[in-house]
Image (spheres, helix red, strand yellow):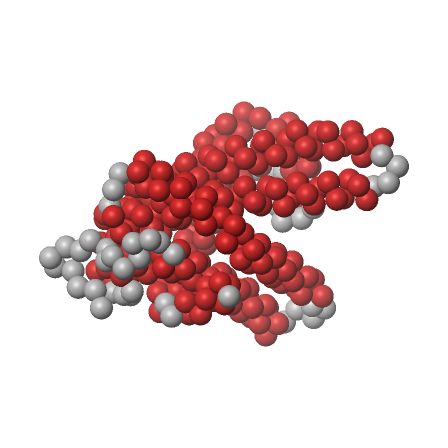
Length: 293
């Protein structure tokens, strides 16, 4: 079963997974602190700063637009800058990860060679995938929610509305899966063939469309498991009555284990995609100073 191969293949690169997990943990803390500092500066003296993680999202948006409209443009500009930095870092990590997985090596020179050769191409693929993601999200949810609220007011049975939302969710996820497959098959082709980005994207569209049906169930199962984990961990934290140092440390460790498992699943998916290519036996291009074991 493909999902089992994804899990087993991911754990074959556990050393690489540890490095990637550590790098992402450090970067997430740095970017998260910077983002919070930006919001604190923008909201300044308002009490809404302490409600960033609570249910008062609507209040925060209204407060930011009403009381801090002059600084809203600066905040969005800084957030956009942080997003660009985040995409650049993720593209660099992805280029190194793909190079190591395709070359079946966790050596630093293999990782760094992949970053130098493919980071610009991976960044362009990531930007295009992100634009497709936002376009598909707007296309599905904006008209659907506007009409859905109308139907909710006029339908006597709300179960039809629930089924409608569920169907739209499946449709939206199906489109996201296609974008994910296209971008990852394009990355795989770039890693093994080092062709232009547009040829890699063309290959990604063709191969991703052909493999879409065989991948859909696996991606849906991983989505369900990830959603359960994302809901279970906060629920477990909410059920903790006594907050001590040991309990806090235990909850932190549970969160990090979940994040590490996500990294391993990502490596397993990359390995499965590279083994699913028609030219899977070809090796990545190497420099004369590079050795792959």
